[in-house]
Amino acid sequence: MTIWPHAITMPIYFGILLIIVSFFRKHYKLSAYFWIASLFTFPLWILGGVEGWFRWAKILSVLLPTIVVGFSRIAVVENKQGKLWDILKSEQFLWFFYAILFLNILEATIKDATMGNYFNAATGFLLCVTIPFAPKFWRIMKDRSGDLIAYTTASWNFLYTTWNACFVYAESPVYFGSSLCILLAAELYPVMKGRPELYITARVYTLAAHLLLRATFDIFPMTMDTSTWFNPEVMKAWGLINFILIVPYVFWHMWQLQTGKCERSFRRARAA
Image (cartoon, one colour):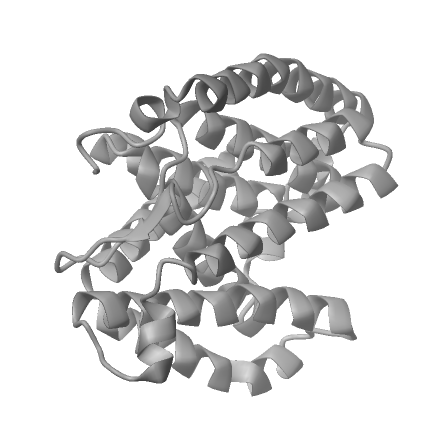
């Protein structure tokens, strides 16, 4: 198992992803226009070997919601007026982002189950159960950043990261290294900022950038092929560990909701 090329390429890619998140957070309007323009790269998707409806659906299911995030940020920050703008900045529209996250996890959960990674699939299901509800625990900030905020906890973010890493390890070992970069960038960016509620924003932009790069110029099999890292026993053990970790978190999550403590434990005063 060769490690040294990944010791160079993975940190570089990780650093680039952190820059991408920071850039799109800061430039909310440019972000919306950039992701619309990204759709016009579709001829490169064809030339790059994107085949089958599933790959196309996967790319579009990430890029299109990313575009919607961008225009919702514009609607809120600039207080745009009009029927469509009113929808995009309404609190009820936050359910759209909740649903996208829920379906994204559910899709991978079903795939995990078909691969026999049952404990990790169960972890994915419990992650769906513990997504903070919209619109109470979701918002788009009205300041100049216009951040999409989801009041996930640091524990939930970690559990999502290790669950998704295990899923990719099992489903696409070739891309495990590059996918680990985007997961760690989304995980560590909020830690660096001291704001767990930025996790979903970081996840949106790292995933969109990754899928766009794979669709237009897939460099990862050449630079970060981690197919030799796969071991079915590691996959099963990892999934079991994830399940063991999330069970007490589910009880804690439900207790916070039942007792009303979620107001403090989910919506931290700093981000309110």
